[in-house]
Length: 268
Length: 105
Image (tube, chains in turn blue, brown):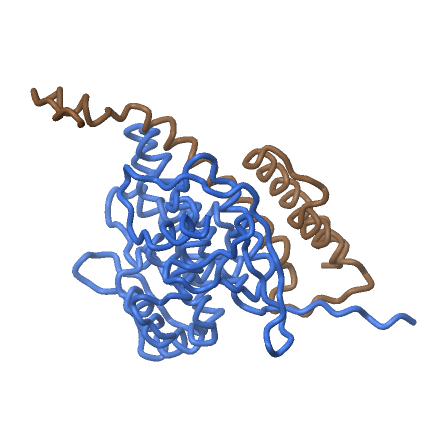
C-alpha cells in the first residue's frame, strides 16, 4: 500500500489518458499538535497521511481547508482526476513551491497582470457590448478605486493603455503583500483564470459573488453566445471551469489567512 | 446586521453544501467531521459569541463560495463525462487512417 502511495506521489504529470485509480477506501482528517502545541490537520487516505507531489506531508493550519481537500479526494470515484482537485493542487503548489516563488515575486507578477486586466479594456464596438461593459464593470472599478484609494481608468482602444498610476501600483502592492504566501498563490491562480486582477479584488472582498464574477469575466462571450448561439460542450464547460477556478481561488485565499477569531462573551 | 440575521443568511448556502456533499459522496453521515463542522458553523453566530472579523458577514459569503465550488466542480465533471464518451479507442483511431495496431505478445 505504501508503495502505491509513493508511485502516485511520484507521478508528476500524467497524460490525459492515464488516470490513477482510486486506491484508498476511507478519507478523513486527523489533527496533531506540533512542537509548539499548535493544532495542525492532516488528510488521511486510509491509514496514510497525504503527501504533496514533492513528498512533504500536507500539514494544514486550517481545519476547513483540510476538510475541503479531504472532500476532493473522497469525491473521486474510480479514477483520480487531479484537474478536478483544485484546492489540493493549490496546497501542493504552495508547499512544494517548485518555481521557487516568493511573496514579492508573486505580487509583482500580479501587478504586471494589471496592465492587461480585461476589465480595463473596454470594447469600442458593437455599441451594445460597450454599454454592457460600462454598466457591469465601471461601478466595480469605481468601488475598487474607492476601497483601495486608486485612480484606475480603463482604456477604450487597443492602442491606448489604461491609466495605472505609480501610487495605485504601490497601494495595491502593499495590499497584496499583507496576504501570506499561501493566500497569494491562491490569489494569483484566480487572476490567471479570470484574466483580471480587479475581478479577484472584488470577489475576495465579497463585493460580488463567484457566480457574478464568472459572468463578468465572460461578459463578451456570453454576449456573443446570446446572438450566435450557445455550444454546450464548449461554452458551458468553459463557464463551469471558470466558476470552479474562481471559487477555489477565493476559498484558498480565505482559508489560508487567519482572518478572524471567535470569542465567547463573558457570561453576566 | 445582527448576528441572528447573519446566521439566517448562511442557511441557504449551508443547505446547498449539504446537498452537494450528499450528491457527490452518496451520503453525509451525521457522525462525519464535515457534518459536525457545518453544524458548528450554523451555531456559531449566536448572541453569546462575538466574531472579530475584517468582514463581519464573511461566514455566509464563504459558505456560498464553497457551495458554488462544489456545484461547479460537479457540473464540470458531468459535462466532461457527457462529451468525452465519444472518444475513440486507440485501435479505432488507427483503423480510421488505415493502420493496424501491432499484435501484443
